Image (cartoon, rainbow, N blue to C red; front, side, top):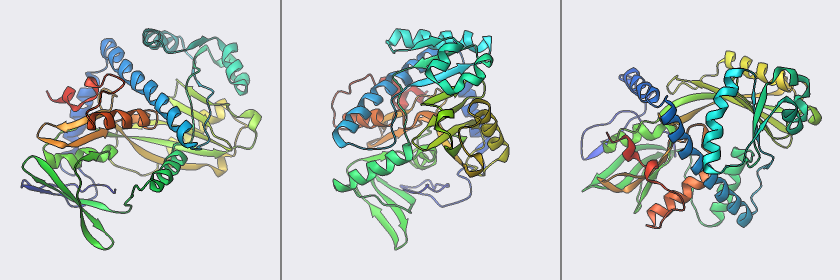
Length: 370
């Protein structure tokens, strides 16, 4: 569905109308509140807890993705060659110890590498070996084109009878007696009301303004990121899988005939304008690691909003006891596709009153209820 509107009226039926920003008046207050909660998670203890939650869900999601791939044969330029995180400073190497402690405790495979080991995993990094102090290799990681995956999955869902409604905007939520009775949408043909037994809110950054009509206060903030998609001109000079440059927090991922360079984290609200300075940074990182791999003049520059929670962990489960037929699946931040299949399975199990395969108590919105 399209983006929800931005203003609500205090009535039995909550009304929303379109506007330029969902928070034209109190946006700065909300931003400060979110940042305060974010800073509250910047301790060693909170890092360890949040990292464990995310890794547990990500690992489960990878297993669910493998099952889906086996059952459907879905194709999305997948690669199963792991992720290499490269370090340039002693401070980064020291911080790596925290990640290794979490990975060791949960039994996730990893390998600490020296510079020569980094080039063993990614031969095209040989020309910058002297600039690297080491790396962390996660051999179980997989990569692929998430847009292609989504489109292919939608086609398979349609073949099973799923109906997708595109190009619409949510006008209001119809509530009565602690139940969401319907969702009124605006289409090219006029207003239409969608009615269901249960409703799942999975609108990313726009989940918050929509659910405020239900009295919820989701701590999901849009963190702006950027990417370049570059055609490969020299496969031998390109990465084999994914390389994460810890210095610039930029990931470089190999597809079949393209390379995607993504990163950045701007607290810019819902602003989707392309910032040329961010492109320059992405190009600089790409040229520094894989200078002869692709044609930057043909690169596609893109920006999008990551739905971030202050602790980095998504919100999955029943929205609120007041509305038992409303469910949440949002706040996945930079790991939306990484956690997608697992999150969907967890939510399906909860809605069906089945026991999920992993612990889910820490994923619900209740952790923010105070």
